Image (cartoon, rainbow, N blue to C red; front, side, top):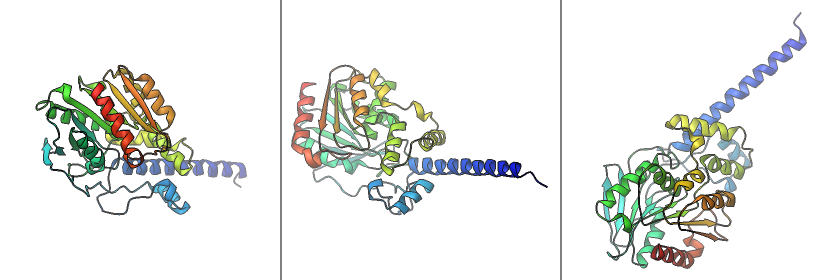
Length: 315
């Protein structure tokens, strides 16, 4: 007769194995959907705050659906379209030729028309702007996104293209969230001397960026976030645990304006405060108290314009 204790032990071990395999499969699906846009034109998964509990369970088990970002608008100002390396789609909006040119890099799940409000505000101040679709977004090629890691090379390609036409001392890099992180990584791995950089709500690390999303759903970070980061990096050919804008900041000496929202639930105050403390050279740090993880022009348009204009003029 079989030993009851041995049967229980086997049952427990099998259960643990099934749970372990299930967690890894779930993490792999999360990692894939996190870094690959959905081309089926399905509906985008709601934000955690909008989800019912059944939708949260589905998102936990199978990952989120993020349709490939498509530009829905064009500038209301005269503009020129051009492509870099037959891959990166850009819009150029001319302002005062004597003023700097601002290169605008969008955030995760977005595209260049999501930066039009900034381009129009900058144009009102006379600045020239170039809006860029990262690969995988808008009219650019590809379908993958590495949350700013490999996008750093795309920042460099845009920068090199533009500095053939405009002196480096007249180039300003402005990025939001993922775009800001890509700018920071780019500056640490390449020799670049832009006039200045403007960083809107950069996350402290890829682990923090993913962890904050799990926090919003109400899930513990361990072990799913660790597994998500591991598989996400593995699928895309880099060690994702070392992707830390807080560390990149230590090597940045370019004049920097760091902007963040006081009500941002995707990037914590600790993350932006650490980035600011680590940044070298001239730097400014501004918090818009009621702003979340959103365009600051929604509620702080005049303040944003004044802060950015003053920074660019004095740096």
